[in-house]
Image (cartoon, rainbow, N blue to C red; front, side, top):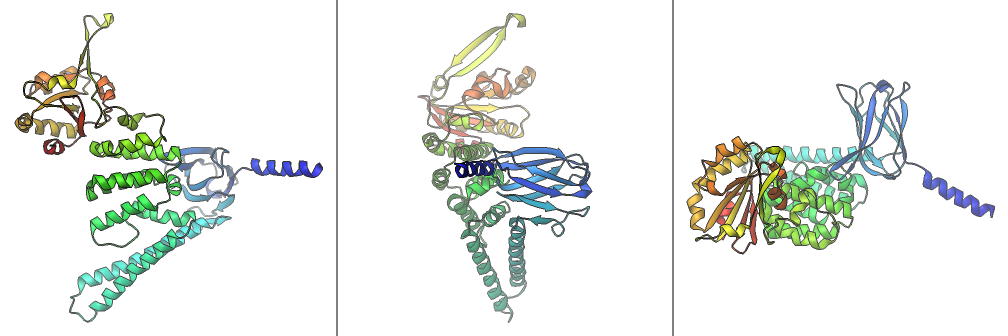
Length: 454
């Protein structure tokens, strides 16, 4: 019985053992600090404190995050010069110290944590390959193909490309955090797993790596989550420009991301960047995957677009509210209009234009729309504009210039107005093309996409 109790207590002690990082930075005594870990697009400050006079202190990772494996940031907060340390936490206890007043890679000492040293060594090895590659590339560009040394430079150039390929293969074959992190950092610099000369080939290589090979658990705690997702979206929308390939990659990533929090974060970031670029066609294309995944139960913020105002869905009614009489009486005049009601008298479609005065892209659009008004009219498209202005004078100063001023609306409620909310418009300008049955055909920030729609 005593032996059984001892075993139970031993197990309990292990379970209660907190993950700890011991630090010794005597020259920073008296400084306050934050200790930050990364969780997707969030930087979580999990510890705050003050360095004691002897410079020795410990960071205890809270139980809800332990054992933590990922990048972290120890940040000095009460010094105008800042300072701190980015370090890889390897899921176990370790110590880090520096006896110098100016910490450097050479004088910071880790004990019980080889991963930081190994990460630095990997980075240095890669930089050496790049340096030799760049030198040979410069030599090839500087010498004529008829020069006797040209074949030597060409051969060495190919050798460096092969060495980089072999280096990347060695990283992908290892499950260790630091080796999975290096390709992630490379993506933020536009570097893939191969050295390629053509931009589209580089984009294809990076997109394929993200869809098929990137370690999402490492990415989630790397501090590069948002940067990599932003790069992935831009590669597809600005370089590859193939919506079908984008959907295919998105579907593959959706299958790989089993963690619901990571999946929701990924979809939220992807949607945010697509919305920023006005690529609502892409959002509409991935909507079936998002809704069918079962991994997202609440659709708020940028995710609201999947339930409201998505391409292929029925357009919500337009609601316009105006206070009448004395303000204290609070008597609103509410008018509800179906978008399809505008598609009459020869018009087959309605183009809702959500904008805000003073927004640079909106001002450009408001200049372009009148120039293309007749072209849109010939296509049977009726323009209806909805302003996010909160100042009536500002709104009225614009509408006299609009050929469709009789269909220019504003409820002075800004982006919180019911129409912006119901159509999940989180940025301006946004245009929504609706057919005569009330079905949303296209959602975009690009007038060119509207003009080219058939």
